[in-house]
Length: 187
Image (tube, rainbow, N blue to C red; front, side):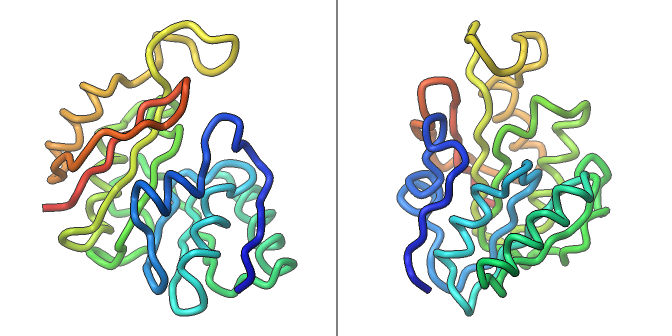
């Protein structure tokens, strides 16, 4: 598959750097973009990287977003993207089998939900042993955009919840000026 550039937010988060250089997604991998967002920015980068033998599961609770991503994938010729409707706040609700995913991403998801502990458990459920989870969320502080401080999930809280979900921290990564990033591994 030829190398394509996908618009959608490189000014805040560089999907290629985060997914390939930091997380290590490779050809043939199975990836889940959990809470994919309106453009599927990370999902399309992952789909290009995993190639025809890999698979990217694009998961969101908003069906209209999934329909748009599905249409865009068909238009661009991506046959390795599967959209999955799910409420990640319900453990076991996602139509992805246990221990089948190599890499998962939660990008700007935890702050938007009332049950971040369940979301991390759901991500861990889908990961195979040794599978990696990239969590990126908003740093504390006041910025001209982004969520209010009261709903942000701190890196410390994310670590605590991830440990409770059966994940161990591999490393903290630089995710940009406004975000923190942590890579976890399923134990």
